[in-house]
Length: 531
Image (cartoon, rainbow, N blue to C red; front, side):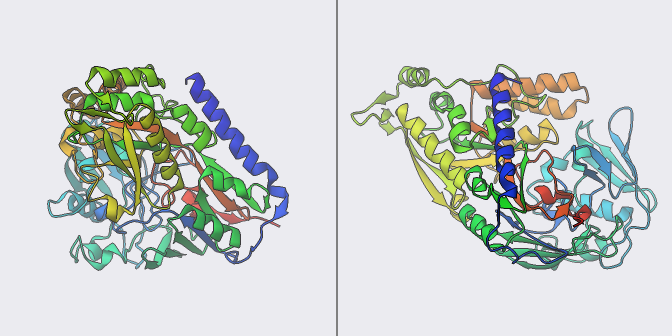
């Protein structure tokens, strides 16, 4: 861990402590609106497009409606869920055998069995299934049921993190198998084995759940659970303040406003969640490696952490955080505006009268899109544009919904995010492999580096930790030399939650916060505090 990382971690801890310290001060105004016994309402920033695991919902676990074969505990260690034990792995790393938990039922009363596991994985991998994440499972050669209580996966190659992929939720064949996988009712009215049952989904507004009385892990004490979809950070904070919400994710500057509220607690979660700028490699400006190299060192990441995140985060130099054992020491990029200018000068990008550079008649200017209502992305976009201008590159920050941004992101820069703590393959393969260039939210920069492609393949196919570490070292070093993205910060997630339950806590979180993550990741085990 670098000195800078230590300072960042300390400041994040201090921020969380400072936010928590004043909780015994004044009472929360407007309380009571969401304080019904046995009911929890939380504010989240995003919602899924579908609730079907066959289309990608809950693929990283904690879907609440469903269970996977395995799940993660508080320390992010794999534990049995629908499997009764961790898998038995063959000596060659290509066969995974899962014994299944007996007596489990879906929420409609039908029994769960091995055929549902086989159905789920085979359907996801089928050519006609519109699951953008199916490449995550491309190591699977076959999946077979051995009776009702055993499932055997055979892999094409020894894919080291395969067990992590089996937190994927299991769908019921007797329901989903009778519908069109892409458009059937199951996509919005799912049936699962999880601790909660969906009772309603008003898109753009809320998802409502009730406790599953037949849940194999025991009926949850929180009987009603609602996720209110509130994309705008300020609106989410206002509704939390009014008492409409029991908890919400908030950026640091808004979380501060709750520091003295009695009966509320601030939870700070360490994450792999990064913010970066995609730089499409076929664009006339961002396609020039000199422009990408210059932007990579023109940006002042430390100032972003200090000023935009109030210390609740770390500088990012790639998808792997600096405090991860998979991070490659020496790939940190120091803020160096003079060197950035020299790189551009040497590459023929010359300043004009207004200070903006041009080369061969092409002006060094491009838009940078960020999602409306997201203060953290907005602040990162504006600060990045300011730093770039000092080097002679003009960036215009533009706000829009994803519906506006998606048609543009194949050719224009986007303030994006990502990150997964499960395995370095998850962080890097879909982001950087050239075969996924321009494939939706995969490899949005159209990044193409043969050395990186080869190292990514080696990292996912080898079962030797030393070989994998060397492969990901190669990836991170090449990314520093040939950036297709400018990584800005890794962001700690801050949540404000009513302090009336025993059980809330945080894991190391991925980018996808609010649905599977947050202090409610284990809401099925919460209990009311004793008065």
